[in-house]
Amino acid sequence: MSYKEYTPPKVWTWDSESGGKWASTNRPIAGSTHEKVLPVGDKPLQLYSLGTPNGLKITIMLEELLAMGKTDAAYDLHIIDIGEGEQFGSDFVKLNPNSKIPVLLDQSKSPPQSVFESCAILYYLAEKYAALLPQDSVEHTQCLSWLFWQESSASFLGGGFGHFYSYAPYPMEYPINRYAMESKRQLDVLDRHLAEREYMCNSGYSIADIAIWPWYGRLAMGEIYDAAEFLDTAAYKHVLRWAKTIQQRDSVQKGLATSL
Image (cartoon, rainbow, N blue to C red; front, side, top):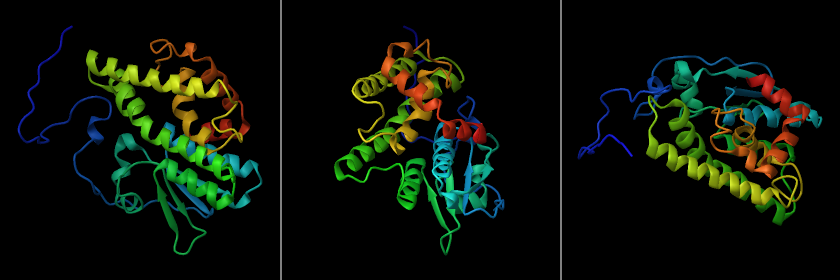
């Protein structure tokens, strides 16, 4: 095994970009970098997003709501080009101090309500429209457990495995092995769970599925990171069955087409 030795300094300082695909947008401070007014349409909901896994959660959710006849879930989608640093524009930072997509602005509220963090947006919409969130207390709690499982786990998949396998400036054995192991463990968690049920919750399709599918479902089907063979995702048969079932939903296809 070969590796480049690194001795951390006593105090870390940022003196150059770290390299890799997203290097130009990474920095150790918050706040805006430039003035930029966000576009605002006339629909009740304004979504500032992009077709990343987290972004897809919200377009899929909104299309599901519209398919259910929730006409006041109509939305305008405004693309935020994170590769160009548009998430650091002044108006965007006012809506989300963390400068991450997606952000939802609910214009039906006075004053308009902004919501950031993708799972918080899913929960907000599920509560607002009384949809895709079980009402039974046991099922409700199970759904929230899986919703927050995704929120906490995806950093290992995206920021860990995805970054070092696909976006880092050069292949590094230790982090790829470390995060591949964790990604496979998480896929095994899902596979064992889905062996006993059609969807993530016993009550049926819910925001838990909408949260998890853009990350783990699309990973298993080889649609993100080009890593299906490397991670042997074909071995997770229950995850694949679940992923393909969700992919066939009309609202999921519309949510994908809207954002990608």
